[in-house]
Amino acid sequence: MAKASAAAKKKATKERQALRRKDEKEKVRAQNFEERCQPACSALRLGTMTTVDPKAKSKPQPKKLAHDPPKFDAIVCKDCGAVAHWREMPATWVLEHREEMIGDEPDRWTLSHRCVPCEAKATGKSEAEVRATCLAAPMASKRWRADQYQTKLAEKRDEFAATNASNRMIKMITRNDMNIILEPLGQYLLRKKTALDMVVKDVEEHERLCRALENATSLQEERAIMAQMEKLEVDDKYLAFSEQVDQHAWIQACSFSDSWTQILDDQGQLVGGMCSYYPCFGNTRDLEQSLGIWIKQPCCRIIPSKEWNRNSDDPTMPRMRYYCFCGKKFNAGWGQLVEIKRRNTRGEMDMWYMRADVPSWDIEDVRAMYLEDHVGKGCSSPQQLYDKLKVIKPTHSSLVIDDPTMPGVAMHTTKELFFALPEFSWWEIFTFAGVAPPKGVKRPAVLRMGVHVVEDLEEC
Image 1 (tube, rainbow, N blue to C red):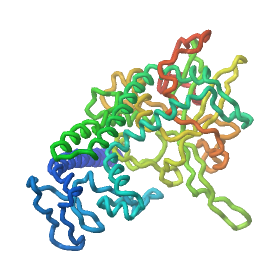
Image 2 (image 1 turned 180 degrees about the horizontal axis):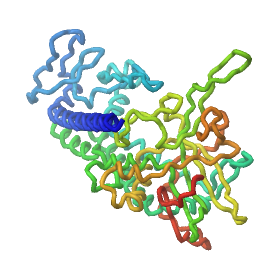
Image 3 (image 1 turned 45 degrees about the horizontal axis):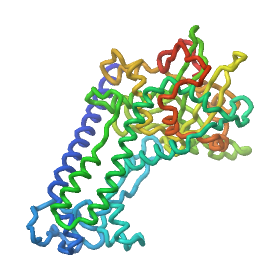
Image 4 (image 1 turned 90 degrees about the horizontal axis):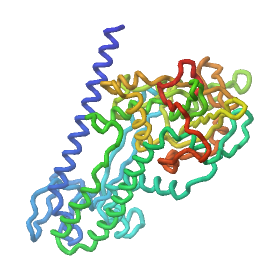
């Protein structure tokens, strides 16, 4: 058994290294390709690029331009055969196969390109709209992050609706209460907020350059504008574990913590905290509707992150896939169950639930910064950090019960009740960045999170 386990770990490590080498080669290939293809940007506008039969066996060759550009690896329109730079070729990813259950073939995607005129004809948009979308595509990820961040900052709520765990009644949690719960993350939220403000500026500057590129009158002017665009399109990196070579591997290891904050008093007793868990709603649970007639129902299990089945034992494996005990692959559309606790004036623990989206890597970066300071010290590898994280299970209540088919595993009562929970966006935590506790509220003497809890804290 020991030999088999060692062989499996060695195989997983080799697969992870191979995937990373492949990603690095793809980045280099893309950079080299862009450098070779820049002169062709204006060729499509000038009408000097050739069109070929896409079914032809010979490789399409562009006509000679007045400035005689160097040869480049052309992208060909799948409809008309036009050849152009990738910035003039809108790309479309098509999902050909979706993995549903453990053991299925992984998701399979194909990439196709159309030239601006063909894309405009296919979508019913104007060529100007298609070209603008194509030029903005490399900033799509940053733009989405900036939009989410700015939207939630503008909405800044004073109250947060949540479902009471005991009687299922909706309660409004005040902003002051949420501030106390999230206070341990305050300084890290402030650091990340500063970084996201820079992302917003990058997006605005990129939009200005796209407009300038449309009005460019020479190839030299286009090249100068593109050079500025490329600098903005570079990944802005994370803040946690910034000195580590495999930075993302460390952050991914931190993402297996289900605890966001745990606040203990001077005696080490829990006074509040926030956890989140991933549910499964695949239609895999057998239910006997009547004598001899069985139907499929949603699984509804709520499983700690470290207990989900994975396609690799290595927690830092790129492109990790997660599976429930029922075999269903995790679907990000299910979101998360957020569990909030705070001790009331009577010394009793109040608990509320909300439904949240799956945290993006910007959100995970905040938690990873905290864990780097409080848990990661002394760890020489992401695996060591992962091993330090405790498995924290959901607390049973009127909405979270024990799975009758798997004792010790929690499940939500029904799928309908889960999706009826009040919504919470993780991007809203940036509205608490660097905010001190309300006036008159004493800062907790001990702030702990993740592994820094007493041994018998099974509830949060």
